[in-house]
Each structure stands twice: as structure tokens, then as C-alpha cells.
Amino acid sequence: MQTGIHPKYFKAKVVCTTCGSEFETGSTIKEIKVDTCSNCHPFYTGKQKFVNAQGRAAKFKEKYSKKEEK
Image (cartoon, rainbow, N blue to C red; front, side, top):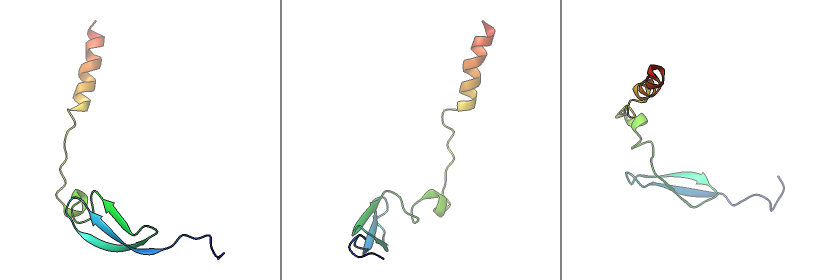
């Protein structure tokens, strides 16, 4: 390794802004703020909700079926 070209490496504190949990990791930044962590993310907690976004398939069919009628 060449000397003087690598950034400083710290024990970084990661703080979740959603649930407030904290844990340590290594980084070139001393503190990292994240929106969602593994403690509150729906995929990891098993509380995932599937939301139909305005029935996009039905909306598509409705839009193009009107053109066929004309």
C-alpha cells in the first residue's frame, strides 16, 4: 500500500432516523444517518404490505380499450 493516499478509517455510528436504533460499522465518515434500517424495514420485520398502485393494469386496459371503440 502506498502511504498518504488512503482516507482515514473510523468506527462509524449508524443512526436510524425512523426507529432510533444505533449500531457500529467501519467507514470513512464518523456518523451515518439512515432512513430505514434492518430493525424497522418491512422486508426484515415481516410486516410488509403490498399496495396496489391505483390498479395500474386496469387503468392501462381502460385507457387503450377506449381507443379501440372509436
